Image 1 (cartoon, helix red, strand yellow):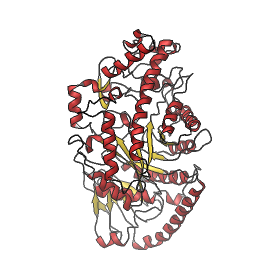
Image 2 (cartoon, rainbow, N blue to C red):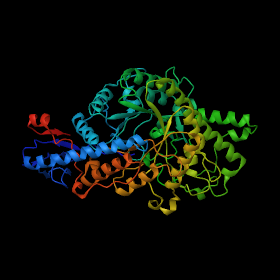
Image 3 (cartoon, helix red, strand yellow):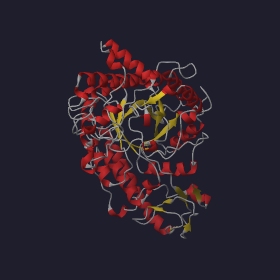
Image 4 (cartoon, helix red, strand yellow):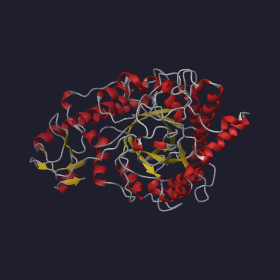
Length: 547
């Protein structure tokens, strides 16, 4: 995941044809206006000038906007066939500040206006546990999110909200830090086994270990009870918006909000791509569970520890005894351990989704959960990186069908990543196949009867990435996508060509994944506008600087 600060956005008096300059600390400027073709949407870096057209030009361009509005009407009409895939855009990770307020509300307002004009269905935001419940157990502050919900509603957009029970920081693209609530960190300092632990004893504070899901380790409450109380508080605070503005609740179930173990942490150089990662089963709660499972199987010795030959974070499969071509993973012991390890993850997801269903059932909001797109070493027999993350998926076993069935049991949408990736873009030594992985997940969800949604794993703005998403959105092989969430809103997204690619993508997704190109005269961002800033803005007759 990646984060770039939102752009600085200027609303200028459109009658003024003179340029203006930004202050030297501004990250960039975006000027939305009805101007000459190829200049409709232009991003400028600090200390550069942006020139506006004359009123005569604006009037001429106004007629073009009517055509654009009709084009949107046609696109929306097409959605009645059921092939339309709505597109959402992820908001910055720091949309709500550490103080609990909406970050840069004026810039957010302008950005939402732009996204609405592009035909985007809505936006997604993380509701961070570390922000909302930071002042103490059961003390919730939703005010920053309330302001966002009202702003989203004002612009006629929809909202997906992630119940983010993980820390922000330490993973791909995390450039801000939002730890778990201070009172939770205090409990972790007293009992370090509350978090995932690897074989060398390294603790990972991203997420509470699933080994203690049902134990009252958080000041008298179990982690599942804490998550449930949090979701209930959200439901009560936003009851009037659920099913209307708030159309989806994505339930966080692990690091990065994904149902997985933190097997490949980037913080402090612990792991780097394409390392196999490590099993995360060495806190005392996970070890106790492994010991009990081994004893129940009549193999007490198997419960002493995890695999001794599974290697280290940065190694390749063939460098280990466990993951190599005919390694320990294919033995009776290997199968026992992997079934236990992946089974614990499934049970964890089942418990949280059951709680979420009990909380949000009847509100009209969909439930979803995210599964990671771990595509490296997919072409090997053992699929080592998937195994350490908790997905028992190998050359001989489908690890995603059980997950899809568990999601289906609760009526939960499975949101899968890496939809934008192509095999040929990946390094040869990593044995990647994101395309093969996506195909497998599409087939698994179709077999299980589970609704499938998607998102891109990395920031991409190029036409090739969008084209790949369009291809995977169709139901040619397995499930088609019911929705797509684009990662992520930032100033680069609003650059002329990037913006054009996004607009074309949104239209294409409205047309059932059929590629749609805008005419050349729209090369600066199309005739979309976040004005023609009309009467209300013109009455202000001044620049509104959004930083």
